[in-house]
Every structure is written in C-alpha cells, then in structure tokens.
Length: 235
Image (tube, rainbow, N blue to C red):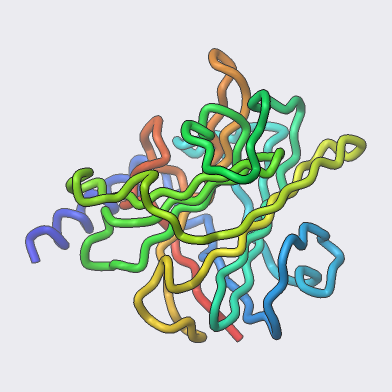
C-alpha cells in the first residue's frame, strides 16, 4: 500500500510539473479487427482506415518539437496487438548495414519508433519495450526498473513482427508492429482490457538528437513508467 501511495504521489507531482500536459492528452484506444494481417502500412487499407489515432508532438518535458508529429493507431485480435506509426521527418538518421532478420541492439541511437507496454498495475516498473526503424530493424526488451536483474532485457523474445516503408516524396515513414498479445498480458485479449502504454519517437544524430513522447515523462528519458498513459481495447 505504501508503494502504491508513493507511486500515486510521484505521478501527481509529474502532472503538476508538466502544467497539465497529461490532462490535455486523451487515452488511446485499440479497435478490434476482424482478422489478423501482416505488413500493412497503408493508411487507406481496410485494416487501418477509420481507426482513431493519438499523436506524439512534444519532447519528454511536453515542449513542442516542430516537424515531428507522430501518429499512432492500434488494433487487436484475440491473438495479436497491432500498431501503426506514421512519422513525418525532415532528415532520416539510419544505421548503416541494417539487419531485418536479427535483433538490433542500441537501435534507439538511430531514428526509431517505440511503444512501451505494461499490464501489471501493482508493479508498474515492469513493462515491455518494442522498437522499429524506418529500415525495418527491430528490438524487443523485457524491463524491470525496480530491479534490472529481474528483467530479461534483450534476451527476451516476444515473437513480434514488423515492417516499415519510407515515402520520400511526402517525407513520412511508416512502421507496423504485430505483437503476440500473450507477450504483454497474462489475461486473454478482450474488449475493456486496459494496458499501460507510452509511445515515443527518437530522431537525429548525436548533438541533434530529439526525443518525442506521447505522454511527457518530465525527465530526459523515456523510461518513466509513472508517466505511461492508457490503452483500452474496444469493439
């Protein structure tokens, strides 16, 4: 109980320090899909058309980052949780010699879209991290901020699938994630399930690196589980 109280107090202090940025952000929804798909990054596809999204527009302190308004849409089936990232860009900072068949450690040092997902509301410091680059590189991580020795880190394998494409004319890149639902939640996937999430975008080289967040963390890092928002599964 004391730990829950401390967490609540910290979250409230973050909210006040950010001048109400959280209150201005709506919770996210994941809309049920009729069937599973793979590698769908088309906004006008039957799978993604009309699905509402949320937007990451500011840095980790809630200050606007012009030119990097990332949209994130989500769907779910009994077996999988899906995300589509729509990422405007000015210039791409890409890792040379990308691998799309093996996990890329330190992918966060390059341009990358990320989602952090937690289902444990009693120990919010345990969550999963998923990343995908404009080149289709990927990494998934098991995180325990309370005791890093308990987390599997990069040794964990969720079995998720990704794809990505770059529209150089529109200066937008798209990324798709298909995450096995059982890898992020011990419950069966069902409407009204609530997950704890945050969405992030890392862009640019060292010295010009920018961090874009859906829910501001109040710190120069994404790893602040107290700042996660809510993703609700809906019909």
